[in-house]
Image 1 (cartoon, rainbow, N blue to C red):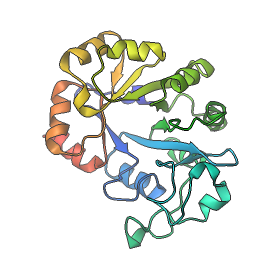
Image 2: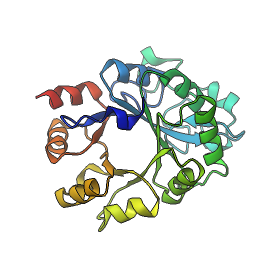
Image 3: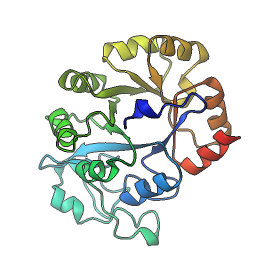
Length: 249
């Protein structure tokens, strides 16, 4: 079951930002399992590539903030990355969590939850990332389940050209004049604006063009309720349980 199969016009989808990253270390299996427990409809995650060409789930260019390592992820091999602790920075009970590969997460998610996969391709562009990521999805028979999106709109367009059946999106922030044109230029179906950058008129135009709108990142209850009232299709949040609670009210 893919993301579009889950659309519910009674409420927006709850999209777990890097998993349940408000309550567990971001982009780890602990955060993804907790997101599912907290009622997330979709799990959002970030993908870089290691020095030896493996797509891995990680947010920053550098290792320092969320592991006990230092340096750039792109100069780190998968074996080296797997030797680092990606949980202790968040709390002692998460000691020993490792940064997962994309393949590990896609295999785990099969039949459980669709993923929104953000390709971290700026400012450094990874050669071959489109082939590497689509290769994972093909091997796991998951091309129809997940979304791939990026701040690098050229990259998003290349994903769609490579796999026309793949749901793709563009991420952005700022005062955009024409949100629909932004998506069309990348041949994308999903818009990921910063939560304060989507206006009612722009949302109406996006929906009229057949686009989905998933703003990020709404953790404050007032923002969650405001986006739901606006009529967005999904809300990206670091606290899925909190979002589900306020979307019921």
